Length: 349
Length: 264
Image (tube, one colour):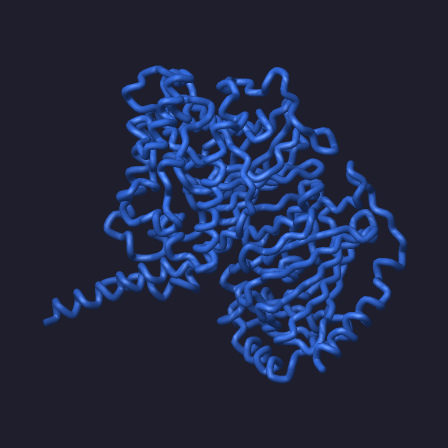
């Protein structure tokens, strides 16, 4: 997150524009088919609606999609096992957001007014009244009666605690001690699986060619070109920050299977055994329903599944050059060295 | 005067017979009837070392010995020489002298166009009707060529803004709005923010394309000039673009000196 505040002027300009773009569809959203669509279930394809096809006959997922929402990943405690809002509840919620209140049911995340270190108003002002809850009327992005990430296994807790302890007190020693997002290696919104934020662009452009589907995340220009010919994963000894993705079509749905993550890719505390199955289904002209199931026997007792409607936006997708304008790591480390020097001088006196 | 020369040169460039036209190869068609360029491609030359012809030379890091020495190459510039304005030729020399310090490739910066094409890494063309996406293995660079009505860049960027159209068998891509910070190669060949590149991708056989790029930048060159080279399909059964997120490989170089000194 913070990386952005120090990125180049171009990136900043892009960021502002992205925020504006991301918010633009919200206004016209009320009347769009996406909001009217029935809550998507396990097979979210509509009964009568036929999804568009590419010239070679595959379901057409192409376009620029945004997933901004204030629906929280995990269900707010007060809602118990309630998976969906009723139409009436949902309308009330939307009306309240228009008054500027997302309540206990919403999650503003980095868009919180007093978010530490990060003032989103710098990027053109997050307008809370244009925030929206997910059009599938789910109370949490995680599906199922529990609506939360399964409890973390003791071995995973220990693994993550050890890693954190190792870094404690050394946060400013070297670039290696800084978060991957600051280093422009893996930013939160380029990571797969894709989780939304309240008011940020988080745009995804999908381009389909024969035998491949390309996913371009605007954030850090992260791109996956996924083969759909049923080939296996690359050998297990090849570990990648974003894993290795292969795909296939199941009816109207593109199913993408990803393994081969590094031990440090760590999605919500996962390890290198993380296995993701993502499902992309065009459920309306302006909606792609995105589902993923995350599984890691070294981290969670059972798999868990998330569903997020992605809404078509106009774009354009800007170039997000992170590393090129990243003066932050150097500034942070330099600052720490100066502090150490000053402390040493004081001690010498 | 310069403008007049430039116009003449554009005309003469246009009049040159394209090598791709010689064997009239007709590429397979996409479902919507366009020449099919999809695939994983790679240049097989030393253009990234130096666009101009060059002899072999020792590498800049003695400990790497012959592993990172400069391989020789006949060059890819039509007419052999890049037509720098006199003052700009000096800057090129200075760049070349300070190569390791100044080359954006060393720092893992986005490469710009045309350098992205002939870096020693594969790239993949994903061809759709309205957009053609090119994903480059190096630095995860990417661009989306707009094949619809021409659009204007919303901002300058490292990879520029690409508008494409078909001319018979050839995909023609007009690239504008590139940052001045990219280079053409490891020999300090450079450009300004006035860079305008026109690329031509022409299928020449089932597994090769002819690639040409006309480079125009009146702030740096006395006339437009052209590079050309074949691109080869990576025909291996398991050919894939793998992850080459190189910021982490440049961090020690960029931030290593700021590491905490061990206390004694």
